[in-house]
Amino acid sequence: MTILADLRGRTNSWHRPSGFAAAALGVVAVLCVAAMVLDQRALGGAPLWAKPLKFAVSGALYFATWSWLVSLLPRFRRTANWLTNLLVLIFAAEYVLLVFQAARGRASHFNVATPQDAAVFGTMAAMIAVLWVATLALTVLMLFTKVSDRASYWAVRAGAVLSLVGISLGQLMTNPTAQQLAQWKTGGRPDMVGGHTVGLEDGGPGLPILGWSTVGGDLRIPHFVGMHALQALPLLAIALVALAARFPRLRDDVVRVRLVLIGAAGYAGLIGLVTWQALRAQSIAHPDAATLGAFALLAAVVGLVSWATVRVR
Image (tube, rainbow, N blue to C red; front, side):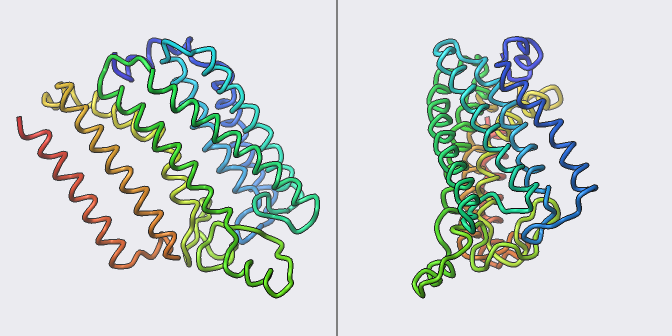
């Protein structure tokens, strides 16, 4: 059974709480758009409600995918249900705190300016740690998923592993910046500890809605790219099945498996590339020759190996 057939035939067996969470976050995302129109305050150079919007959209995708993935387990379903319920509760609590801070016009992450801000950020940090452990456990359980289509089988596993890597990369944002360390050394007390911009303070010019820095490196990019491997690779498997009707070579299960594995390797390379770029304090909007060369090499290798897989019998 392919992913596409599974999506059509077993929706009723998906994990319900995470499915409801995905639907609720979809509604919340629409409300955040309305809030951005009605409340045009800015925080750190970005619309105040842009961050709740991004978290709502990302969370909706995350929980919709896990709702389906849990249904694939032939064993350990009760454990997976419990872990996914925990993810829903933790994310909901964290999101409430995020919206609470946004309504106050305060930063939610890295903010230790006041005891209340520090308490909110500390609570969120503890929640994220629990969320990571629960996601790790679910990723291990994904090794036991039952998908008869081999391409889908590998897409699910590779997507879950790379998604966990992406979540882990968020840890890079918690390290104090050079400016914050210098402030401590001179006896000062920074209002923020950690940040997502490399080479500059947070709050500079950024891409619309996404907010990714256009003047420095941004650690949110590898975090985002990695986390959504959970959707990208299963979508690749779906696309290959859909294209098989037009391209007979893709009807070969072995060919689709190889293309999924190539796609997973290429996606891992992309995560590494955007991480490397961000750590060099380089904006995603202004890549240098080294970044462009590395991307071109990665794209060429993935493209040539994929072409050879399809063309060579």
